[in-house]
Image 1 (cartoon, rainbow, N blue to C red):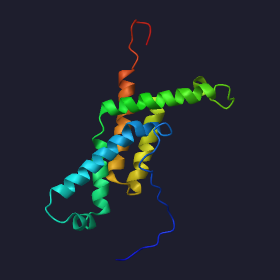
Image 2 (tube, rainbow, N blue to C red):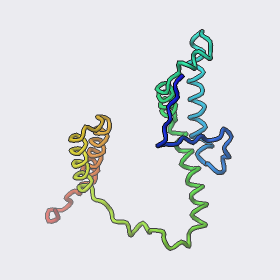
Image 3 (cartoon, one colour):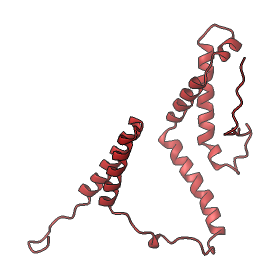
Image 4 (cartoon, rainbow, N blue to C red):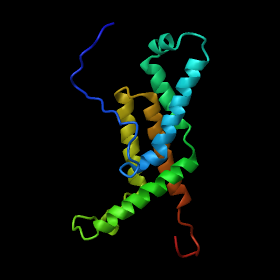
Length: 166
């Protein structure tokens, strides 16, 4: 067995019994991902008649990443809604404590970005991504975002209601 010393990053593991009050996401989302991942790992081990230790030795990081991706994709819209509710409650509790803070930015002071500006920015990003060999999935994401901004323009187009207003 060969070991490799890597010094430019560190890995932190959450303890298995994290307090849910400290981590509101753990009440739902993380717990569901953990359960789904473990289920996939058990399916991997149970579908083969081999010795479990041998099976786990050939279990690669790629397998773990694909299983984690599958676990993430198994999260339902209902789970996400529960998560949003939990996070909103936690933020509201914190917001009530911080209401007197002077550094809070009022929503009305934030300049609104026009759809046309967003489309121009996405076009520049697309060009940069294509020139620099960015992954095709990321380029497609930029194109979808640009199309979304274009659809906002189409849906919000003002209609002429009188002959003299255009």
